[in-house]
Length: 533
Image (cartoon, rainbow, N blue to C red; front, side, top):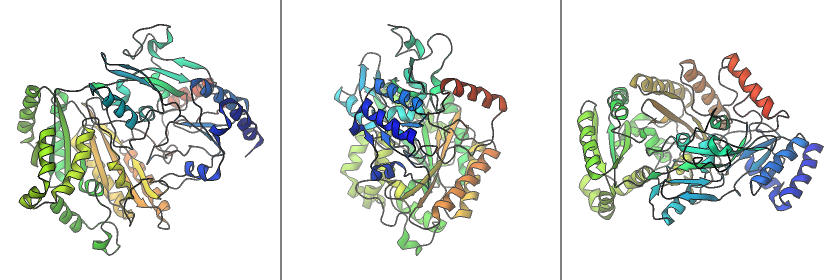
């Protein structure tokens, strides 16, 4: 630790309290650990408790030329967790800023801080009669709402595009000054939480996927609880059926029949979501043989692709949408289109053992897979999906999940493309081709995210305890990212492992971004290297 950092730590202790400046090596080791190999070291972790302390910490960092890397709760699994983008950064964790500042039960919004997690917001809304729903991601229940918004993440309901449903940011700039975006810059402006544009230039996007400021507060719009809800599921027998199915689904998004995000996962993704790698049936060999995969697919009743969506509205509205979906999907080679609501789910849970024998399927295990997806489309967060990170670990997932400490290997690549079957098929073929050379299962899910855009989440899942796997997985990641971007498929977000691996953008863009960074952060102390070379 250099003298600048030592002096900064002395000032941090005076500003926020000695107990909130952590230099314990065991704690620092955890913050330096991700689900893939990293080399960055951290001299300290600081935990300010309010916006004023965040401002003070940034001023101290500038005074001592000490780099700071802000995180919310540090649950950015697969993209770097709590590890900074550059070596020697002091991590500033904002988990103590965990207040829900305002809840409006007429207009349906909450104003909150970065320490508020999915678990906290869901419980809060349930305690307030569940009149409004949040949108949940498949990530950990204890990950930050604002942290996900800052990465422009997405979920499952009609409010699944998270950044599209926020307003009125409070941002601390790298020099310690605080600004409010939208109409929030005017004292007493009543429309701040409900009108995102404000007056004049729109700055909010500058503070997502960037190192230009620290978001300490914003307003999240909530979805009114619908009168009726029903999810639907279907599968495809063949990988090559994906393209035509996406093309058949597209009109249902464009005309508003399907208003929520819709997920299509391949058989590798589905299988890994509810069991560990079947080491006992493969004699320890990888990757999973296709024949065994197909056998397991028949046992568990999933196809090459499995799709899930949801309908919201009155019973009459849902019935009309259901009728239209059935008619449209006759044009695609789907099988077993099923609709499910709360009553049906309760019946299935009550009679799961008889259904197991009647249908000759392991119905109790099927429900374990089905329920988390069903709940996510109702805005209910879950930790169930995180257990899939233990896919290659011989012992499987423990009762208490901690994938970083348990040395689970995971990296995500998330290319985005227009909603067109040809693009989906090409992304899938590129993924298969690259993964086959590295002996990984090509687990992928495709999300029809908006009326016109789809995103693919490609998982590189492995066991970090096996010598050489970290290096091999990174080679796989780099090759796949290069092949995808060469074809025009760029990720919607980046991890620590990807920040410096994209092709160079246009020179004018880089010049513009660097001028903004140099103006706001002349000492280059905030999140060095994060989305900004």
